Length: 415
Image (cartoon, rainbow, N blue to C red; front, side, top):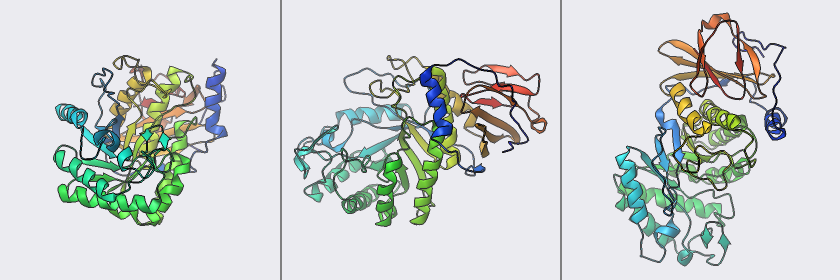
């Protein structure tokens, strides 16, 4: 299709890449169909709160505060099974430390209330990755309600955003029924709002394409009325970021069908854990930038990247093992914020030749984020754009001297 009067040249220069990288690039056309037609972005200015992080800050490691800007921090190592290891005996030292860090850095904390302690679990001997019994529903819901109230009262005025459970569509996280989860969300919501009416409550976030069934059931059974935000984990396995768009649109459709289409949709965890190793640092940087553009234009208002400091099972890493030195992907996380925050996004157009063009408006002027999912090519500019330069993710600025510019898997900002 036509892109703002643009067309792609036929003499695309060839590039040499590894077999792994070629396979990943091929997935865009082979496995991922871009949404048909124009993708209309939500109205309004893109806020800093779009850019958030999952940070482990594992107690047995030393992780400095991230060197890139971000708005919200989704906690780890702060679940029910670790905070109340035995009944009425709490361990809050680590969360207290996290809350202090958040306040020092003016960073909003998202705390997930999840994972049943073994002593409270209906399946105390079932072992999953998070631990013994954590996937089972509580034997006595009074224990759950007492835990929620204890946390809410302790961190009143300090933690303002709570997410109920983690990936309840997966057996390693939840083996109870959807009805029970709806009841637990209802009880938790009532308690949290009693303690602090200003608290924002995020729904249990399913994960990936298989999670839509749980979301449909949860919302159909009335779970949406007890939350302020619908949470989801938009993992797309080995597929490129553009695969998130149709999944987000499917989730939005389910929300509309169940009367909660007016609520915000947050991507509280997503990143890449395959392939391993990741094909290239260039592609990793492109994925980060493209993922944030695609999430916003498809209707996600907050995106908590996973993960700042996980060098274990994630393959697309933002930092080196020292958790300080930025990889190209980490630099891209900062750069794409500079491009997007404070601007409005009109829409994105996609084409059969793998072009994506997303129009930004800033101070009355148009800017364009452009990439091609298939690889390097020459891109013909529209004379109507009246542009003079383009910027790469690494910050390099190039003056435009003709009607063509090089683009590829990494977006460029044309101004």
